[in-house]
Image 1 (tube, chains in turn red, orange):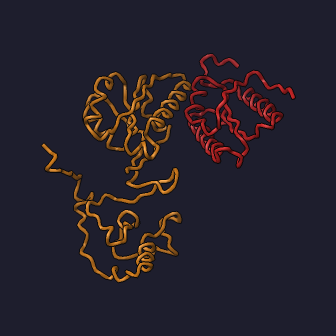
Image 2 (image 1 turned 90 degrees about the vertical axis):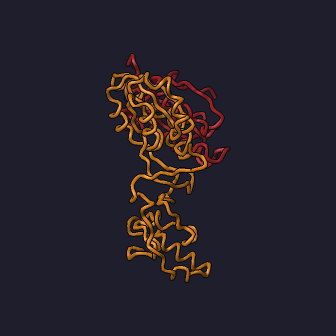
Image 3 (image 1 turned 180 degrees about the vertical axis):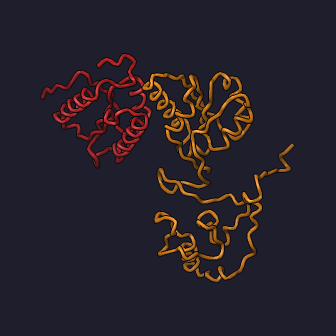
Length: 114
Length: 222
């Protein structure tokens, strides 16, 4: 199965989404990312039991921070899918890229180019 | 420990509106334990302020540091070389921190990033509750380790008021009536008669009613 996903998506691998912290997401935004999403395992399927559930809360926190600043919280998202769902992975990548294109470049970026 | 909550980002941004270069100082004491002013929270606040200022087109330079405790002058002194290099300093410690900093560095402006709320502990991950009011004369042994001064909305010392209903305080559905808990515990332990003992009026002069307090250990003080 060879599936393609948009080249705009840069993947950073972590052993478990539980490793992703609030500061990592904020730093991505601060560094000019137009959007950032976390693709975790299905809820209830975390190898470490609650890594993905905790990170969902961290993502919600970051959305709240962005809202307070006046940046669209939709630029940050949490998705759940299993490692066997390659099709879904590609779908999510397309979905997120479309969403971000709709929102336009991040207001934090200095060049503000799309 | 002392428990605090972070102020809203909006409030903090207003505090440093005109500033171009700031320092955020965390504290490794209580505020680290209650996840509001430790190194992680300092980083998050710095990042959030940075993003907000970039968005508004008035970028700001932010440095971060953390000291062991902001309530001890020996640690506050560690900021001596850097503190005056900034337009302002944000303290993420409890209310003691910005005051100790202001006293040590009177020429600098210090802003509190947290609202100090109470003395308490964690009852679950991410949940803290008040347990002590710092009244200066502890009486919890009369109430089987449950403090009516801190945990009763009226600090009643001789029994519940009429606002207690099915174990819940009238102040909020989230608040247990501590007097209901005290009575139940006394009944379970067969010591209900303890509550028939009429106690002398509590000396509130040791609490805030007596004004700001001071504690001196003769064996330690110079």
